Length: 237
Image (cartoon, one colour):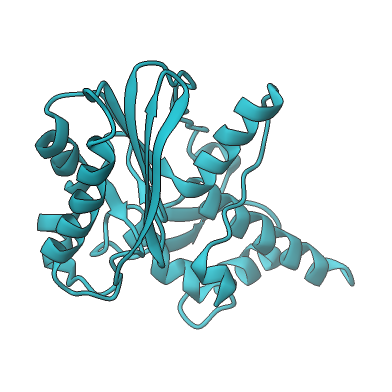
């Protein structure tokens, strides 16, 4: 069909949007053979979406498992829809610490009963290879914020990239030069270690910075179904 190229383009863009929104370890296709073949080629090494193909294994925390695109024979061979929404509270009562990790600085905030008592931006070098540098930089900034509070009831945070439901830094590009094996050993659990070393076993929740943007908008306008876009140093560059 003369419009088949448009269908391939639209399918590619929609898939690209969805896998960055929800991540994907592989892609399965079903539909007209020529369109599926074209989309499969696009989501392969050398294709239009090679960046996604190379990035998704890291996003999913499985860097050694290649992202594969396959075509199935029938719609029943496609996996069932699976969604795991994350519940984030919007209550800021008590004494709470928060951090936001960007490529240019570490933002830290101390809040007591919905009132901001401390807020600071601290520059850091995300290109550093040593994970201990990153741990110490974040911890030092958080300790200063902690001094503004009589105690710490909970800690919240945001960072770029993929944060697991268990607050793990599955794949965060604010640690770009940490070697893969060291990243797995020293960075994946960095948020949990910082929280425990700083305040013991208090509640901790770390999510993606774009999700924090959407959550802040919900809090402000008192409505749901909000899309958040976080434009930091990468956008400026």
